[in-house]
Every structure is written in C-alpha cells, then in structure tokens.
Image 1 (spheres, rainbow, N blue to C red):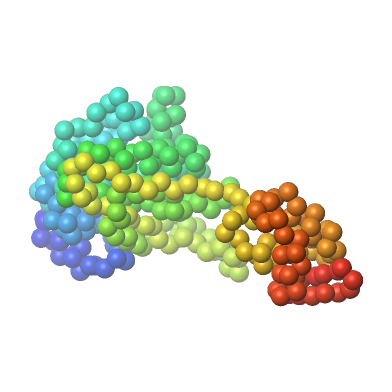
Image 2 (cartoon, rainbow, N blue to C red; image 1 turned 60 degrees about the vertical axis):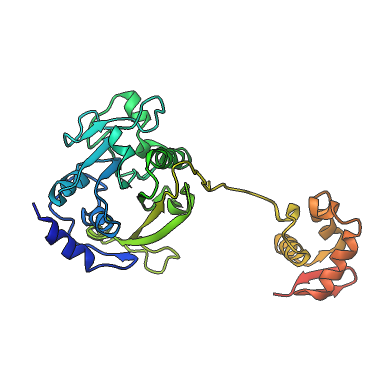
Amino acid sequence: MMNRDEIIKIVSANDTTVLSFPNRGPWGSSYYRGNCSGYIPAFFIWKYDAASVAEIFAGSGTTSDLCKDMGIPYKGIDLNPEPARKDIITMNILDDQVELPDEFYSADLCFLHPPYPGINNVRYSTGMWHGTAEEIAQDIQEMDWKRGMQAVNHAIMRGYNAMPAGSFEVVLVGDVRSKGQYHSMIADLIRPTELHQLFVKVQHNCVSDRSGNTYNRSDRALTAHEMIAVFKKPSGYEIAYVVPHEYKLDVRDSSMATWKDLVAAVMRKLGKESSLDEIYKEIEGHKKAESNPHWREKVRQTLQSGPFSHTGRGKWSFAA
C-alpha cells in the first residue's frame, strides 16, 4: 500500500507527454499479462484532479487497488466471470443490452487499457482465466485485428456515452506485430470527440526485453512504447466522432494523383523500355483517362517533361 501523497509525488515529477514509470507499483498482479503500471492511471487522476474513476477492461485490479490508496471511488467492469476485485463486476462491454454501472455516469475519469487484438502469446479467456465458448468469442484478445479494433472502438464509445460533461476518457493502446503483419491501435482508434492530448508511455520489463530479441539491420525495430489518447467530453449531448476507414484505390483511378504520378507508376510497373502503345494500354479504361478526352496527348506531354527518357521512336524509359 501507498498513501496519496507518496503517489502524487512520484507521478507529478513526470509531468510531460512522455510517461516513464519503470516500477509498476504495488497494485494488481504482475503475473497478469498485459498489465500496465498503476502509475499510469495515477498520473491522469492527479493531472485531471479526478475525484472518481470508472474503468473498462479492469483486468487484475490495478486501478481498483490504486484508487483505494488514493482514497477515491472506483468502479470497474471486465469480461472475467470471476473479477479480481469486489468493485469490479462481470460485464460484456460489447453487449448493448447490458447497462453500464451507475458509477460510470458520474465518474470524472474513464480509463481503458483494452486487450490488443491478435497478440499470439497473450491469452485472457483461455489463459488468465478460463471462459466458456461464448465468453471466448467476446474476448477481444482472441479476435482478428479488424474485428478486434471494431470491438475496442465500440467499448470507447460506450464509455464516452456514459461520461458527464467535462470528464476525461483515457485510452492506453499499443502496436501489434503478428504473423508478419504490423498494426498500430492508435492509427485505427475511434475519436469520440476532439482529441485533448496524446501521450507516449515508455515500456519497461517487457517479454521482448528479457528475450534478447533484436532486429539488427532489419527495417523493423523493437517496439518500446505505447500510446495514450485523452478525450475530454465537451457537453452532455455531443458525440462528434471520427472513425478511421481504410481505402484502397488504383492510382490510375485517383483524382488526386497528378499525371506525373500516374505515368511514373506505369513506367515502374512496365519496368523496361516501353512503347507509347504499351503505356496507353496500362492507362486506358481507367478513371484518370476517362475524365480527360485528350489523355493520350497529356501522357505524351508528361513523358517529355518528367523524369523519363526518350530512347527511340515512340520508346520511353524511366530516367531514374
């Protein structure tokens, strides 16, 4: 246990947007995978002068224990059918037929450290505790990336909807590399209102630290941080959210791409000395050509002024 003054002395010494707390503190369980340092929620309780806290994804009870030491009311929810603390209740945040506890509607701060979808070596419903098939299906950790992030964003919106005006929602997320794919949660995170501020959390005592893994001269690097997004609710009614959306578009169909962009892409694709007919064939039938009745003339003009070389009668190559 620690007293409030001891906790505030530690967190207030780190008052920048880069939060580094090597010691996780005496709260929760260090054996519960994915736990963050209790000094993280403590920092935001101090920073925003929160008098009460609600938590989605309460895990091993780190924030619950912290709030006891800081002497403030706390209520948490978790999918675990046997919650780690008495002030954490079992709830599936993805089930909109189940209401959030009353305490969420008056909390000054709502804290979320959601499961990270698709991390292969971390298990909750099939590791930290043992769930039914239905519970496992609702465990974000067991979901693929796209479905998992939709679930994380759903949880963020549910927490935000319950918050009173002037309160803060603090969301701690990370990066995931799984099966050769790299994903960033912060890039796919919903923003339920104007972003108040972003913080960087330095990672300490990770499995990757102990494993001695290194990417050396690879174009990848070991992840040594997580991100924290903070949202402040401006009013009791407003929901003005931004939802990340993935777009895939052929450059030949893009209105934003210039003719130099387009011709360069075609020349790189052909990868050799090419005739005008070959270049035309790559562009014909696409929206960029359909939007300009003189597109062939535009292609010739671009070839003469861009990073291209005329190598013979009707022949062109990429100069680079």
